[in-house]
Length: 560
Image 1 (tube, one colour):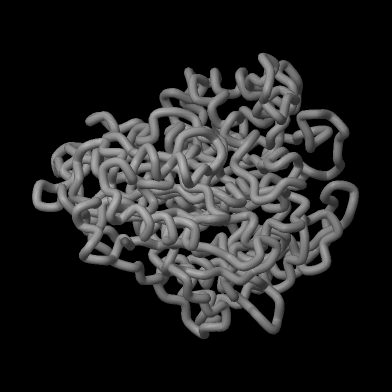
Image 2 (cartoon, one colour):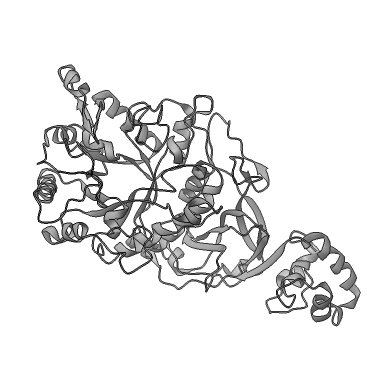
């Protein structure tokens, strides 16, 4: 019998752990031992108690599951209290300043950066709207040398070359371009975090483990304050002097701290910082496997300044370069990045941590293929469970790790990671629930959140096993009383014919990457108690729930 057949209802209705269940998948799942033994399965589960159907079940079992191991995972109800509360803008995106042709930039940024992305493109605009209510973070290492022309008299100065990591660069944003970026975000329903300039901070590079700057000068705040005066009312937050980690008790450190103090005096906008890179987060132990994985002396000292009030939110940058053995074993699950985030939790208990610029391997490769999406869904789930306020994916468009293509022939075409971000934003709310599996599973991870849809629970799942399916048993989750028998389940199941390619299937149908306008993906709808997750699949489920964290309106309102 199949899940969708009426004849299978007896199997679905059975609330007991009955090894003689009629469904073929039940028979298979209860086969003793690690190896499939059809004869022993029949003997122990069917033949003795149901001899009439044994032969038919045996034939169906061979036909359906000969090459497919099935593991039953009976989910348990999460604790009543949420595991964490994250921002409603958790799944966010980043747009960088790298100009077309940059030599040290993580890939091809042509028509993808703050300065030259085609903000009028219909597909790009529709993609941004599907990521609401997230944040668009405008920043990156180069924002320290960005200049702004507020009138024609500023243009020559704005376009003048200046040093950045031992080369000459020109980054000039006219008032009209800044306004266009903000309008683009407003139209999409995205908030904006803007990285402020800090001239001279990256004039030359360093080989120190806490890169990048040799010397941090006093902050020339003229351009930054002009930007805040003109557009500050439209920013959700600002960042300053990203990825700078001068040693404490140095002139450079004192200059950086003085800059943050001045910014605190000049604005009431939320301040995020210091947005350090991985080495400064973890004192050089980027894999974060040992006791040496702890905040660097710079970061520890910085967060003690002003009794921890120098910034409103601790911002960090991180790339998960160790995932899948440096991305050689695919698909990969999250690795060093969540360990780095976990190491910072206690240090930023009062302010919270946001991953301002985070992504897969920053040298690219397969990070725009479907293989990346298993990692991306997994790291979103793990970061949320750790209480990370937001996860700002690098990058929205282009380079080696863009959610969208920036090639002229496929501009803004969605990579599979885009659909992970868009579906997460739609289904996974800010109330994070506890563990629903009850133990570690090397290949299969599940994350539970209250859905933004009142009274519904959402699950995100990823199965990286190459040949093993998973039967998710939902019966013990807190479902509404009328659905105890068979749940109303909405399913977004993503699979691919080739993890190294870009073709992505939703519930068996190929997603059109060439659609001129992107729209939310519609789920398959079922009435069932179990859901089959095939090998090499990821996705989402949503169904009604009576879980108190998802139905108590007062609690949800207070937590937001």
